[in-house]
Image (cartoon, rainbow, N blue to C red; front, side):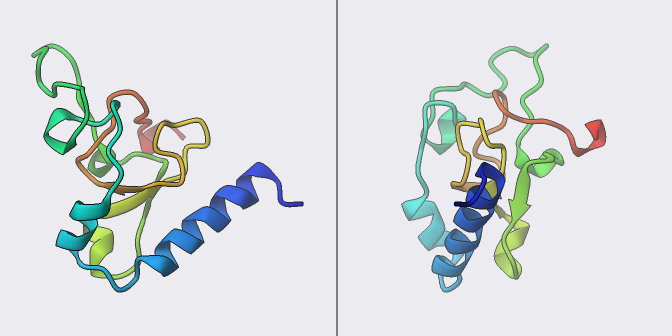
Length: 107
């Protein structure tokens, strides 16, 4: 039986393979929306509501964002944070981050 890390890697691989023939607009139409996403992407988090708060997203260098191969990798990732709300899910790079972002500079 695969360990949790191997299971997550397999989920990521399967997601990448299944979605290899989609384009950006098709991804936007099917991407799962969660309450922890920013409002403009279907969630409940009002980005920039507090001018003193940081509102990072995957594009800001999240250590858990695994870019898709090819052109879609410029905008689309799969979250590899095991306990994150979007773990194993296709994610638009600006869709989320305030509750799960960890800078890759923190390593």
